[in-house]
Length: 202
Image (tube, rainbow, N blue to C red):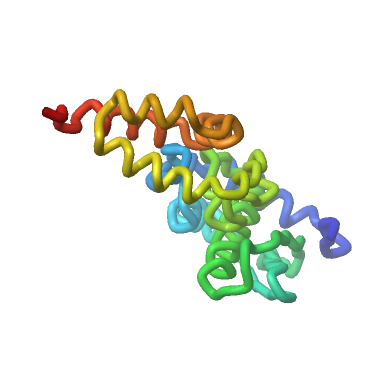
């Protein structure tokens, strides 16, 4: 949906320009556990914009809605003059559960608010909204059939030492090895470190 607005925008535009001149960047206090990157959460964005927007007569209303796993948030920026602008952002949640829906709503509220107010914090917590296979990041390939059992067996072999681990690795299906090193390289390194610490058989 495209941005819509009141017939006139002169007063809202002037007030928003003044507010944006006073808005500072939102603090990056949250960490994405998958990428170890920092991002500003919704509370930080609100903290950055609330006072300047209020000072210049601008209020924000955000209304969530859903249709199955499709989550939308409408954001309306209103000025004391009666002028307004609105837009809707939508994403598809990883499932229809309340936790996934809540993550999507928070994600959409944050992005819409910082977009309207002109805040540009570092990305990103999109993974929590759309999951590891969401369209906001590079899609992860599907694991080959039998991979989970293979990885479980490989983890058990690591307890027997480096030689046994390397032998099991060399005898493994190449698809499994490629998937592990391509999607979970740290996991493979952790297995090797575990094998190095295993007691040497008498």
